[in-house]
Length: 335
Image (cartoon, rainbow, N blue to C red; front, side, top):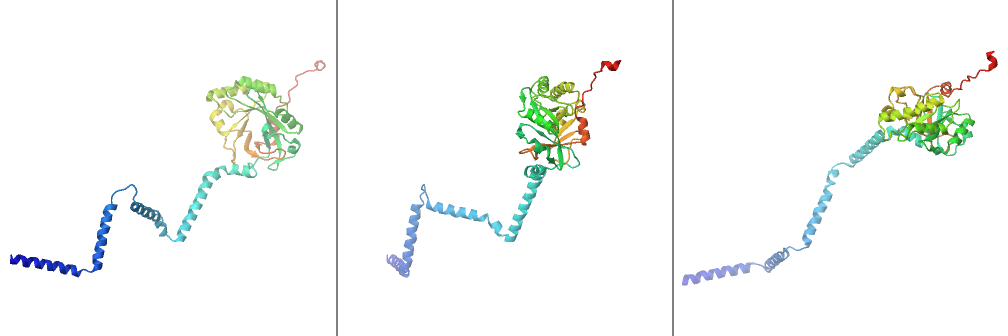
């Protein structure tokens, strides 16, 4: 019993000495820690909105946004400027090569003077109601690439019902102002070819000295290649029989190669449309080349199609419809 009392007294003395050794500030700090711990446990309960989580997410977003520029901060400023300038030059070269270069002739035609092919002296135009009212007296004294306007093709008919609004006036004025004139028919592939030929002959009366009649073929419609060739040949045969000369075929460069590239059409004069190139890529014989639709000429407001003739002025005259031979014999001459 005595030993137990001695043991308890020692424990009490040790506890009191420990408590006395702690300062009031230490006790205060410990209370604060305990209080914070209790608050943490209360606040740790999951709620719908947690201000602590928002603060953490904002810090993370900020770090992510700024980390993107860390790579560029490693480079000196002059290197960044050189790189940006190099990219700009590369973009300009790319744009010019793929978008400007192939259409440079078209850009020049739209925003300046059209480029005229070299080596040709006989120039002309083709017109329709789109050119509206033409000042023929001014046109007579106009020039294309320092050469006079020598010939004029005029739209006459289309299909079996359409007569160009300005055809009769243009056809008359061209003759009065000493132009070599021609008339063309716009072919509709889905309309009967015989009826189209008869309609053209009814509306157009070419005279000796005029260019041969022209068939404008640009569309295949629903016809196959063989059907289109048959229809075109029908129109050509009927009109040739009427005037005694082979009509001129007007068509695009690619359309000719795709639809009319047969020996049956090689014997006809060709008027090829191929824009904004220095040289016509069609390798066979051709007579006229429509090289731009953005031409400018005195006497016509707006743009006009420009053409060149593949030959001399004398060759152009030889292509026109000849005078009909007079087979009449005077009875007195037979005596």
